[in-house]
Amino acid sequence: MNTSRFVNIEDLRQAARRRLPRSVFDYIDGGADGEVTLRENVRAYQDIAFRPRCAIETPPPDLRTTVIGTPISMPVILAPVGSSRMFWKRGEEAAAAAAGAAGTIYSLSTLSGCRLEDVKKATPGPAWFQLYLCGGREIAAKGLARARDAGFSALILTIDTAVAGLRERDVRNGSKELLTRRIGPMLPYIPQFLARPHWLLQFFRDGGLMQFPNVMLAEGPMPYADVAAALEQSTVTWADLRWIREIWKGPIVIKGVHIGEDARRAVGEGADAVVVSNHGGRQLDGVHPTIRVLPEVLDAVGGRVEVLLDGGIRRGGDGVKALCLGARAVLVGRAYAYGLGAAGGPGVTRALDILRADIVRTMKLLGCRSLQELNRSLVDVPDAWMRRPPEGGSHEISAGARAARA
Ligand SMILES: Cc1cc2nc3c(=O)[nH]c(=O)nc-3n(C[C@H](O)[C@H](O)[C@H](O)COP(=O)(O)O)c2cc1C
Image (cartoon, rainbow, N blue to C red; front, side, top):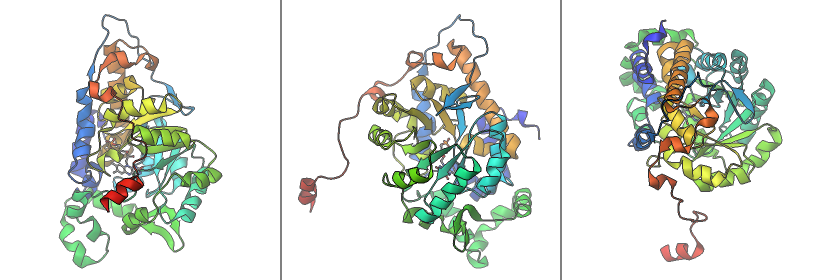
């Protein structure tokens, strides 16, 4: 497929919308509750204005950098995106191969449709493994050991998923009913698949599997239907870092940091990097957009570990704004998932090419020759973003306040 006709990420999004059944497209595209944070994540970059230096000769800027010691060709990493095998045949392998060819890191979700060993083999580049404690700690420990043995170089621990967010589009599209495998409840939701025969054919040719081979329960791979309950039953807590450290000796990245206080906690618990992330607006709706809280998190971390960011990045310029504020690199979720849904591996490659070209052009127009030259003086940021939040200590209610409420 000629992917050069996709000019920007929105073009890939529209192509994914045309190719995928509604429930699959909305699973990628949607967010929690009123989707306020989903929209704000994207919009908030507009609150930042660039302050370019002009009349400067700028040779093509060097985008190479390192993240927790891993060299990458540009400061863009693929975020963990679950169930990518629904978007394209062997979707996680296709996306990992495209990331590796582009010289960057692929992050594999615990909740993926391809075996983690196969995904690692598919990419010539580095890969990170994202951990959920689905199936309980013993099952998760086995998955972790497999990821270690397969050669994943860092672990992402996602901490913002105490329960699955309410994604209203998924409810309306019958995500629950479709997983019952009983014709009665499924029937009203079948037409959306019949309207996408190419996708349907590819899905069945790929095995039509609806299970997670990296969560191996006693009875076999965890089925899709069990995700919400599995997440709820085994919330990650800071205490888990201890046993995880026993198995995982490599770097640990804490993903899902919304405020300075949790960033400090992550550093204190020995994290090697944090990701400012609200899960792309898919979990707690009504939290600040990530770019808005990046200054607070950077301030709390004080340079002790690298700070990454994801959420709402649809153009390379958005990523440049985050880098100007001090992020080491950004992760993208939907930007590449749309590409995968639209055109498989070549669609992911196209998404990364678009973002790379955007970054190069933006840096040249800013008068910057290297990533090191990106700094705070190149962006105007609303004053409120830079103000320190009130010192509050723990969010837990004091004994006095509890008594007063009782
Ligand atoms: C379809 C989809 C599935 C996701 N699955 C996971 C997951 O399994 N684990 C995880 O830590 N984050 C998951 N995320 C969140 C992403 O890692 C990332 O935080 C988010 O997509 C960033 O926002 P963006 O999509 O606006 O780039 C998922 C996001 C999407 C869109």
